[in-house]
Image (tube, rainbow, N blue to C red; front, side):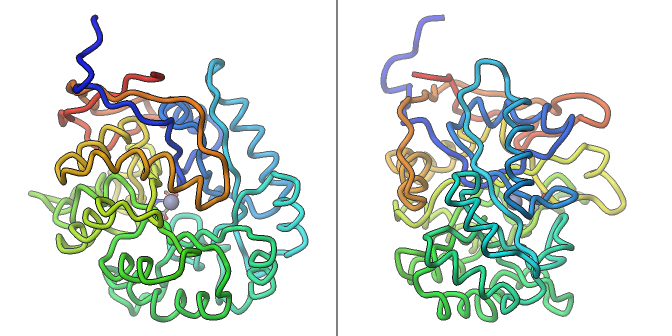
Length: 352
Ligand code: DOR
Ligand code: ZN
C-alpha cells in the first residue's frame, strides 16, 4: 500500500506510557507486546500479588517483563516500588541509586485493586518521603481516599483536601505525579501547584463520563478506579491536556482483566486500552483542535519531569480507520480492548 500524503500522517517522537499495569505470568506475556509496540518506555505499576514492594522484587519483575517481550522489541520497563507502612527508606534509596527503581507508588490501603498492603496513613511513610525528596525520586499517587463513608465520586476531591495538600506542604520539594486524574479539582490542584507536582491523564477519562457505565444496562468494561466522573470533569481534563501544560502527560493506566473477571457479579476495575492508546489520544486531541499538542504530551513532558532523556526514534499515525476487535486472546486470557467495536479515525503505523 502506498504511504498516505504527508498531511494524513502524523509523525511524533516515540512516546512513553507513564502508568501501565503489565501483570505477571501468562497475562504479562499476552499484553506486554501491545505496550511495547507503541511506547519506548513505561512506568510499570507494582500492584501484583504479592506486591512489588522491595528493590529485589522490582529487579526480578523487570527480568520477567524483559523475558516476556517480543524478540524485536526495544521497549524499556521503568520499575516502581509499592509503598507499605513498613517500607525501608534505605532499600528504596539503594534501588533508585542502582537504577532498578524509577519511582515509588502510594496506594492508600484498600483504595483499589491489590491495595490491601498499601499505606494506612501517610505519617507512617514520612521517613521514606523525606528520603525520596532528598534524592529526587518521584512519588506516584493513587489519589483517592478509601473511606467507605465518602461517596465514590468524591474520593479524589476529598483525597486532595485531606492527604495530597498535606504531602505537598510537608515535603515541598518532593516530585509527585498525581496519577490518572479524573476531576476538575485535580486539574486545578496540579496546575496551581509548583513545577514538582504533575499529573497523568488516561485515554478513557478523556472520552467517557460516568454515564458510559450505565448506557442501557450495566457496562462493566467502562468501570475503573478512579471511576469516570460527570461530563464537566471530562471537559476539564480535555481542556487541561489541550492547554499544553508541561505538568500534564500521558499515562494510559491500561489495566487488563480477563473478560470473565469483568463480566461478573463483582467485576474488577480497569480498562485495557494499550492496543489503541495512541489512536484514542489522537482522536481526542484532534476533536479539540489540539493535535499540535499531542507530541509534547506523549513524548516530552513525561521524560522532562522524570529527568530522563527523550526517546530517539519516531512513530507515525495515519489518518486511516482502525477497528478495535471485541477481544484479544482466548479463555482466561481473553481481554476486551477499550473502543471494542468502534471505528477510530487514526491508525498506528509503527516506526517512522
Ligand atoms: O481501574 C483500576 N485498575 N484502577 C487501579 O487503580 C488499579 C487497576 C488494576 O490494577 O486493575
Ligand atoms: Zn493504575
